[in-house]
Length: 221
Image (tube, rainbow, N blue to C red):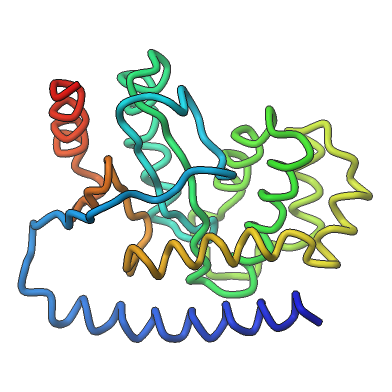
């Protein structure tokens, strides 16, 4: 019952954020402006690539159902990893956003289960889920329990019966609730949203802007 109540709360939050997003898009008079927060998201318990103690923390707020997130993962993420993550100059963390409702929840529950049971396989699972996102009609019902089990079988060593049970019981809902609290705290209205040491970029696809923020932070060390 507690998990169900949390799920209802998440869905209500989604509706609120949908309204906020529409308001922001219509009323945003600060185009091309990054947003600087006084702090940055806690990455404790979050999937993180690279050195967690690196001087620069890059965080993606993403949604497995979001086509822009898939495109960011294909166009921007590989260069970021090559330039800064593989050499431990920065860390990269992923926080679930659930703007697309039930399917976003299901994919995120599956990812959290994989991260808990087989963390070394998380990023392979993560990438494969986005690879499975259709390039056409992505809003169709493509995230299913069967699809998540198929992706897990191809990318992880996780027991599939365990994963199916955890999906049915929504075992990892508390982790999603934690993520949505961060979404609310940092006023995430669009996906993907990219933060570099507390600065939310106005354009997540502007790699030069991402690079400039990282380089500036590294120079200050």
